[in-house]
Image (cartoon, rainbow, N blue to C red; front, side):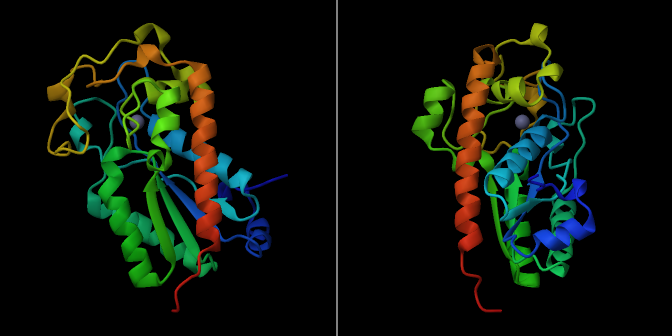
Length: 253
Ligand SMILES: [Zn+2]
């Protein structure tokens, strides 16, 4: 059996696995509103699922830690249930996880992010883990790995380098990863104000753009078939990344 998820393993199994493991994968999610039709766990559920599938694919070179289930979501706080950390807190948590992994001999860490709001914090954490603990650390948001043309053939509304929010992309993934939690009767087109996610989205309150929490995008275009294809593509690309990163030379300490 290909055990890759640390919380489901015993310490003895982790010790044994460490003979061959090259990369510790740390998924980072959010607990954040996802419109009227998706649950607050969505980002965490996606990123954990993706990391586990990729680690199984590249077995035995990667193990996956539990996901960090709360991210930077201050711009969603008008929606009940949303939880947020401060940037400093998320960076500190990731640093502590990095320190722990170093104690057990992990030589490389891949922080895999599943929520746009965490974008900057995970980059800073990766840099600090390298600088302070000398563990080679990469960080990326999983949608950054997607070849744009291929992804656009699956998801009509795919925008280069971003998964969107509770739209066609995330709703399609939900049909595969958390189908029982999709409120199909609540699916509507996004009716909010169109803005690019990277253009000053952090100071913007999502509620100002959409009272349902779905500022743009079109989840009515989502389907389980699209979700399966998209997931295959994401897992393929993340596996490729983990193989390359696992072989990378670690600089002299
Ligand atoms: Zn999301």
